[in-house]
Amino acid sequence: MLRRLVSVFALMCLIVALLSGCAEEVDDFDIDFTSMSDTMLRPLISNIFTEPEGFVGQRVRMAGIYELHAFQGHIFHMLTLADDGCCDVVMFEFQLNDETAVQEDALRNGTNLEVTGVIRQFEFNNNLFLFLDADEIKVS
Image (cartoon, rainbow, N blue to C red; front, top):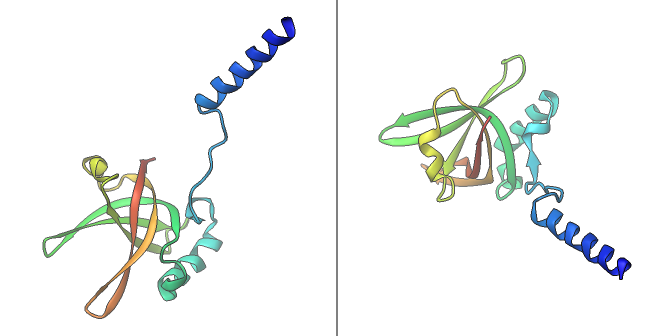
């Protein structure tokens, strides 16, 4: 009888632990810019813009400083990625989708953000442009 009670108690503890989120979190992206050194980040960004076909469709996480730009009636949400020395600066556009739209009013110029999403491309005037289709934004 005691053995049975101990087994039931152990099983209940395991169920509570799983339901309370104690399980290990799994990252759901292909490239994590946030864990890379400047030495790794510079060539990767260069490759993304010079050979985009290898990166379109990949899910990435990047961190940087938010900037809002308006041009000819269009709003552009930009993430500025800079190295530690602030010598190399890259601006990467991200677009808000249905999941992130509610967070739009929380965005302020100069805010540090971590953005996760899928790299997409579009064509305009016979030029290809990349953007991040953001589905998760964290203010850091």
